[in-house]
Image (cartoon, rainbow, N blue to C red; front, top):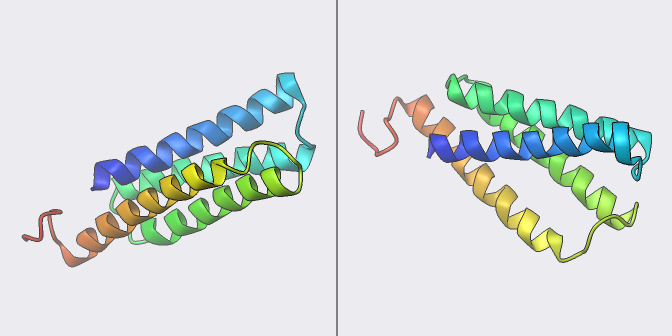
Length: 120
């Protein structure tokens, strides 16, 4: 479960970093504040993946904040800025929920001192 949480957060973070940096340097389709928010949210998502890797007590909090921030930016881009397709909400919402569930389960197991299978 921890691997899924780490991978999910890192992939989401890498995607946001890539899109933010690429659009800022080459494409310039998005407004500057959205590009910067994408870069910041990508860095926070990657930071959350490191905290989950290290089994930090702050991993759950940063994981939730980073996923909410990234999801909020995505919804803002699609609804306010007109970027993307509304059908992407279904895929993004499912992905975010799966990663959130993995982060929650892996951090919960770490707090209880469990190895992920319910055993100490």
